[in-house]
Amino acid sequence: MPTTAHEDTWVVIPTFNEATVVADVVATVRTHFPHVVVVDDGSRDGSAEAAASAGAEVVVHPINLGQGAALQTGLAYALGRGAAYVVTFDADGQHRIEDAVSMVDRAKGEGLAIVFGSRFLDGRTRPGWLKSVVLRTAVWVTNKSTGMSLTDAHNGLRVIRSDAARQIHLEQDRMAHASEIVLQLHRTRLPWAEHPVHIHYTEYSRGKGQSLWNSVNILVDLLIH
Amino acid sequence: MLIQILLVIAVVALLVMLARSTADARHQAITRLAIGLFFVAALGTILWPHALTRVAQLVGVGRGTDLLLYGLVILFIAQVARSHRRSNELQRKITVLARQLALSEARHNGGQVAADRQPRDR
Image (tube, rainbow over all chains, first blue to last red; front, side):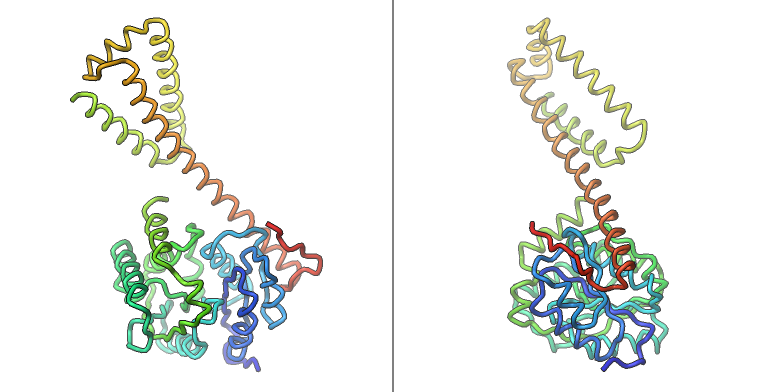
């Protein structure tokens, strides 16, 4: 049952053709956070209806724009509804709600404007070696281009306070937004931290996750725009 | 060879030009001047075909047709880059437009899925 503990927090879940899992993810999130907005990025499989039936508010892109665009739409919606904190959460069920809760608590407790989830701060998450190489390359490129020192660049679990969220203007519609959001948050000069999180590499998320090809696309998107 | 230097300079200059915003008046003026120059050169080579060969030999290329080919390759690359930029700009506008549409529809429906929503078929 939704509690009132996180009334000021909105969870943003971008989704594209994930009708089979998004309802479960929304239901799980709603056990801790009453306000969930699912941004359906032009799905054709009824993801929007599935998310709405599980109790999320739904914003539907008329056409598929990309995850970065969906995230930006979700931020705009959450801020418009008066969110003090925004949590970004993946629709494929790879994140744990416990991690999101402890990240929000930490942001509030320590006065942080941004908390990035990181799967590499402790040894709990074990991606395959190829995925590990891809992810660490992405971290390296992101750190080089942003001047930050993160341990995990492409983690979809983040907590962003409204003053930081207001300064995000993602223009990378596709996957390179993960680095772009880090860069823009870094520019806010607001206090931030990384928080260890665990990722479930389910069969489902593996099928959808970042392949080596995708990382090539991310690099090109970052370099040419 | 001189032609290689000239071609490299041309490619780099085009890249620099294209990397900058296409919105300002100066850029537009330069583009128009370049187009004008191109037409003058085209007319010149049509009226005096041997002149092109002489120019080609001047820069170290055997035949005028080869010089023409090199020029075309550069223009082609420039056009690809230009259309890439244009399509990116267009994509950005579409994103903003679609987002506004999605947000206002969501506000209108109180965050619920519209009952008459037509699933996108393609």
